[in-house]
Structure formats: structure tokens, C-alpha cells
Image 1: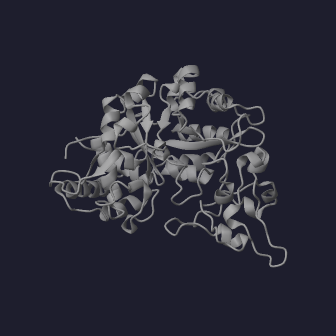
Image 2: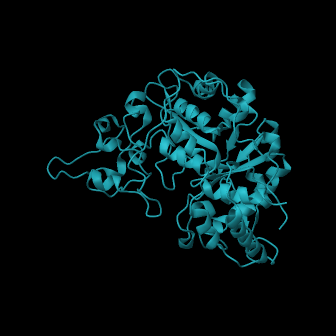
Image 3: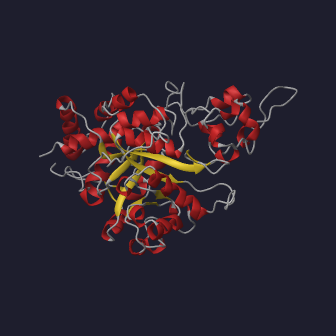
Length: 438
């Protein structure tokens, strides 16, 4: 194998350390400097080697890749952060997502870019949460007094003392203030919707994740994340989440919401080249491109059209806008889920991959679009099948080690410039090993 990582220079993605300006001490949360410095020392842990050992060896290409990664793991000692590796919500395979602890784990796992999904509180302050209305599944709010403020609070039967609406509980950041948000503790994502008590309800972590590190989960405002990421020396990729309340909200329009996200980077003197703003909403993309062109030129359009009626990722005639139209509107980076970029190749020759680029991937590259994808290490065990992120390749991807086969095809054949991962160390390991090639 003589392929290498795709060229990232054109987007400034190779340099993982952002250009830092003077910080405002009044606006910067205090963290233990020794803790932050320790988090900048990349330690990948045992999972990359576990996955390498578990890889398939059905073709010569797979056997060669496995041998190369094992040899790299043997001799490589100076692991470095990589901009190929994006920490998706931090490192939520093992840590409560969008928390200080999860972000530290993401940085320690070698992510060169960290993500804060951005939504807002009742006082219009921006915070890091994957969804505006996920507090009941990602924090301890249901066991606090703030549960009374939830859009649909937990309901306890006065006679039996049992929880009677587990499937309907709904708690949103927009239900509470920033000050109230800060009193909550992040938990592993999950909830038992058949629970008859709050304790059972909160015991909903999937078995392939862990609660080992869920004893603390420090929630973050968007501004907190900016200050932390700068201290960690990483680039930043905020995602403007779709509001789940009617807009305008408390006088804030959708456009003002999109602008507020950018304003917080400007207030912190973060260079636009260190920020990859994301949105599933094409109107947000157009707003940034037109009104904040320095940030808009590397904004990331998250392609969620797979949920749209009539859209078929295998049929270009159903794509509206087309790849060329997206490029003409100023979109430079397109980010679909992994399965939209790959097809199974069960009859692969010895020197081929059992996975190949999809027509969607080929058309995007032909239109001059760069590709980022999501999300590696988010699925449960691949041997069980039915994993959403691998749905187009299930016929040939049958074991967890094949996540590395998937990653290799995405990088070498599809040409993605970065990969979101719930355990960034896996992508960082691969990136470090490929960077050692002559």
C-alpha cells in the first residue's frame, strides 16, 4: 500500500494548534493548568490495538493494513494530535457527552478538532448540548428540583409512588436559565422508557458504553468550550442545532441565533480559520456565507436529506440542490453520514477493498466539495448487525475491527478530510500511522 492521507493544506487543517490571541481573564473559566497540560499529551489507550487485532483479513489489502497498523503500534511512541480526528461531542463512548471531562478525553485521544453542539437556554445563552431537548437523557435533571420546569416533567403516581410517564418526559435547555443549567451533572446518553422509578429511568446507558466515568460531568456553555478548546490547542467545530421551540424565541430570530454563535468566537478573538461552523440547515449556511464570509468559507453543511421524502443518496436526480448547485452557493465542505459515502464490494479482488466509494461520494468530489463524515465508534457491536452508521456495508462489515477497514476506505478511497468519532483515539491512531509512510 502506498497511498497517504489526503491533502489537508488547502483548508488549513494540518496545523492542529490555533493561532491564539490574548485571552480575557474575566471571560475565561478557571481550570487547573496542570490538568489541561496533561490532556494535551496524547495517550491513545488500548482500544486502537484491540480494533487492529480484531480486523478482518479477507483480502491482501486488509492483511497489509493490519500488519502496517500493528507494526506502527509496536514502534510508535510519540503520538500527536491529528486534524483528521474530530471529537464528536468529546469522547462519548466512555464519557458523558459535551462535558469538560469528555472534552479532556477527546483531546487526550489526539483529536485536533473538538465539537460543541450549540443550543440555547431560556435566557438566550448558548450552551453545549446535542439537542435542545435532551436534558432528560443526558443529565441528571429528572432527579433535581429543576425537573418541575421541564416541558414534560416526570410524573409520579401519588398512590403507588411509581413513575408513570417515562416515555414522555421532555426537558429542554430552553426550559431553564444558564445559571440553572450549570447546576446539572452530565450523564451518559440514555434513558429507560419503560422505567417505573426515576432510578430505573436514569439507568439507561447501552451495554456497549460505560458508566465508569459518569460520576462527574461538568456541563459547558458555548463560551466555556471556546476558552477550553483554545487552552487545549485544538480547532473548533460548533454545530448550530435546530431549535425545538418556535422562533423567534424571547426576541431571538434564527438569523440572530446563527450570528450569536459567530459573535462568541469574535468576542474571544478566535481566528476564523480555527472554526468550522456546522449546520443541517442550508439557510444557516447561506447566512454565514453572506454575512460572515471569513467563517462561512469553511462552514460545514451537514447533509441530513436522507430523511427527506423522495431523496435517494444513490440517485443524483433526487438531490436538490445538486452537488454543483451546493458548490455554486458557496458550500465548500459537505458532511454526510458514513453510510452515504460507501458501498459494499463483496467480490473484491485481493488488492481491493471490500468497501468502495458511493456515487454520492464521487459526485461530491467531482463538484469540488471537500468531505467530512460522521460518526465512527458510535454504533454498537457490528457483529450484531443493524447498525445505522454502517447500513450500506453490513454485508461485508461484520466485526468491530472492521471499523478500521471502513476508516481506511473513507480516507484513502473516498478522500475525506476529517472523521467525527465517539472515541477519537481510533482515528488519531490511524492518522499517526499513515503519516509515518514514506
